[in-house]
Length: 153
Image 1: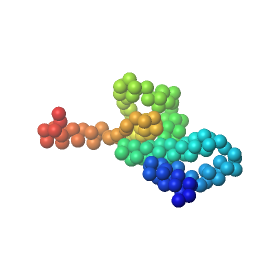
Image 2 (image 1 turned 45 degrees about the vertical axis):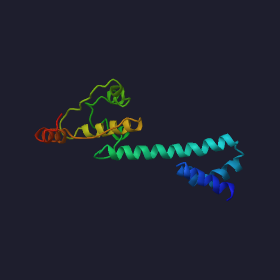
Image 3 (image 1 turned 60 degrees about the horizontal axis):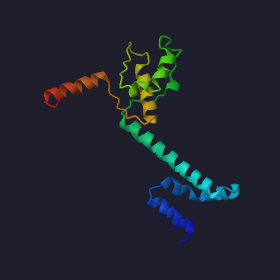
């Protein structure tokens, strides 16, 4: 077995599938750019880490049960001038999570509460915080069922 194939197999054995799949192209690029061994390895591992992070975000987003995928950048603050953009951007820092505080989004239908909740959830996932989306109605129904089944405790 040649060294490159052995290295690829070792990467696969270690669970570094992205690094294994790009090994040849990164070796070629490293050769053309005359990279040091450390720079080559850093480049290869950076790609693996980026792929893992993307898989993590995808899995956490799926587990969060978000009704759709919308970010803060997609929110039109000019459409709803009563919403303080600066305050929402401050919420996106997730300081309230570290403080174990709650936020409540109140308003009539169609003003963007769900969009903002989802956007904050997506930002939380990106920052490594677990998220689970549930409407108030569904939560109350689940609590009623648990109470009726004597599972509330």
